[in-house]
Length: 138
Picture (cartoon, rainbow, N blue to C red):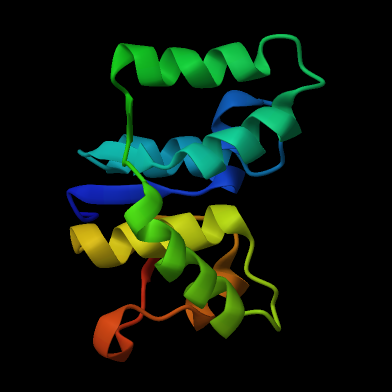
């Protein structure tokens, strides 16, 4: 069983909504196995909306997930800006994008250690407090 709190990254959001994505079936399977609520941040939504933008219904489908309560937005505010900058500086060699930094930041703050991402390379490098690694699904 997957953790009851799951952060979702851009890749799985796009794959879940776009059936033509090669990882669509794998991402749908993760949701079938999980009994939890998905959480993310506005930078992830913005990135996913951009990637889905060529599909007429893409951005609308994202907003519908939020409106229905299937996807919870975890807040970021001015108090998080310095930590976002520090994370992006620390991982600048990857480089760390704002969407990833936002997920790492809310994971630290909300004590979430599981991320639903297709970006296994970067999230296997990112560390939580005390050097703890993320649990990555799928």
